[in-house]
Length: 336
Ligand SMILES: NC(=O)c1ccc[n+]([C@@H]2O[C@H](COP(=O)([O-])OP(=O)(O)OC[C@H]3O[C@@H](n4cnc5c(N)ncnc54)[C@H](OP(=O)(O)O)[C@@H]3O)[C@@H](O)[C@H]2O)c1
Image 1 (cartoon, rainbow, N blue to C red):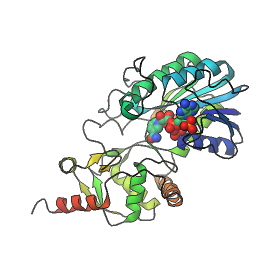
Image 2 (image 1 turned 90 degrees about the vertical axis):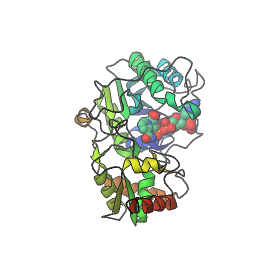
Image 3 (image 1 turned 45 degrees about the vertical axis):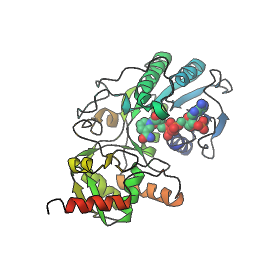
Image 4 (image 1 turned 30 degrees about the vertical axis):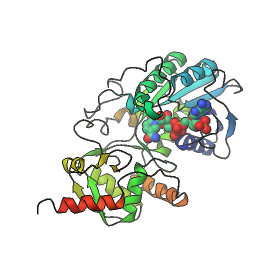
């Protein structure tokens, strides 16, 4: 098939290209070439989607397109320029479109969404990150209305993990568990953690184009208890049976340990009950529609290899080793 990736120069876009090439497809990636580069074997077309006519130098028809944009204007320009020349349209959205972060077990088919972005908001980056979910809601509607529900696959990705993830989220746990020693484990062993391997998501998106899968789905695997998450990452980085010390949420908050990502953060940990639904979605429809999650240890192994090969690629962040040691010391000393 002729596949067009609108993007295709970083993380997920590159994984989509890699999987599609391996499957024997003819792959075009369209981007500025500013934040990254396409993988070898892809036909690269330099475009600037800030220009409403920016996609006009894309020739011919495509059997399938995958768009990763977060900007409503980009989605509109793409649909206006290409909808008549494309068979199947996948739009990569996000679970940040959901309005209710606290209720566990929600399904894509029925979960309430945040309101679309107001017309004047088009770039949910930097100080405008709060508009990320609303802008994706707008993009989803643009695609569904412009392409038609029978040809549109809306894939609401959860946390994407794996090689080429430059964030300080999953890489934090890869690095930390590989280092060994006593590990600060946040919250409780049975709290849910949910994510998707980048190559699994990429494969599903390409197969959706091949089969013409339409509809709206969450793009993530089933939730697993945090104890299993940490054990499988540890096994994948060659440190089975990690020495975990579980520290409860209240103590972590009191000691300025922060959730999710950034300075002093323990990634993939979110406050409860406020975020009790964020990492515990019901993805039975997703699995029935073909997402096939690999073993987490495999993702951890591949991510560690990539981090070893690219030691400066991952952004700094997460709880620093000396800060972790200090919190653990205070936790052990809290009763005496
Ligand atoms: N990472 C996660 O954990 C996570 C979680 C949920 C959902 N998602 C979603 O998953 C997708 C991830 O996609 P990704 O990894 O490929 O990264 P991305 O950062 O979304 O990639 C954006 C792509 O668009 C291109 N681009 C940006 N501005 C452009 C412009 N003005 N004109 C033309 N091209 C432009 C970029 O290349 P150039 O800059 O070179 O032009 C890049 O290839 C996104 O849809 C994201 O919202 C991510």
